[in-house]
Image 1 (cartoon, helix red, strand yellow):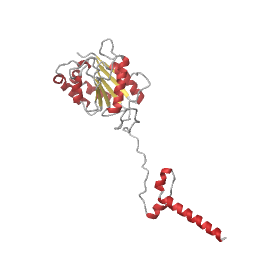
Image 2 (tube, helix red, strand yellow):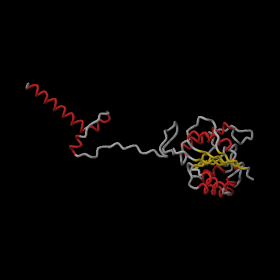
Image 3 (cartoon, helix red, strand yellow):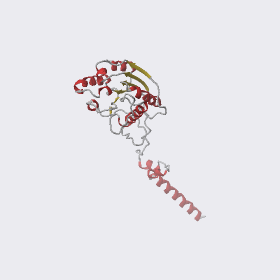
Image 4 (spheres, one colour):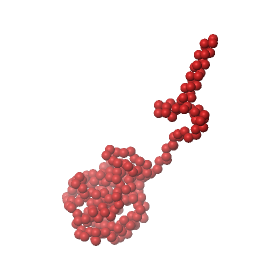
Length: 265
């Protein structure tokens, strides 16, 4: 009988020792998914034990999962946007593809095509400001410059109009899509690149970008324009100053509200 009591006592002491050890070294054991008690913290008065921070509320600037080859060092705005897309006839090819992106990603889109327009045509009027007031966009795309590839002394003749356009845009995030040159220009791309802030200008004229041209030799074909818009949208998610969600859509094209202005004189 005496041996039985001694055995039980040893078992109880061993269990107590194990309980105390788990309490004191529980933090180290948590990585093995062993839950421990707070006995040790009660003994030593530890009230600073690590607490799991509740996940923060989701907002419109949470990070999006990184895609292959893309650098999401900054966050991407995941909120649905009201997008205004203004520009020249290049919107004929770009607009329907951007509409598909908008439909896929929860944005709304209004296209304003002003045929034969330039920075001068837009910049000497208040039309951009009027469309902003009418449609209340919180993101803007601009595609202009194709009609200004060969303007001489372009800074002297166009800078003030570009500045006026930027003044009308104000603080609204925007991306300016440069022209898809078919010949070297006289400075429009340089003026845009040097005037706009980093992440606001997409340079469309680079050696690694190819365009199949329509019969006029200037406008990209419909398929080539769609591929161009794909590159722009991938760049927006990766490198734009204000990144928004533009995952590639399943549909090739979509329709949206479109305003057409007569060719500028």
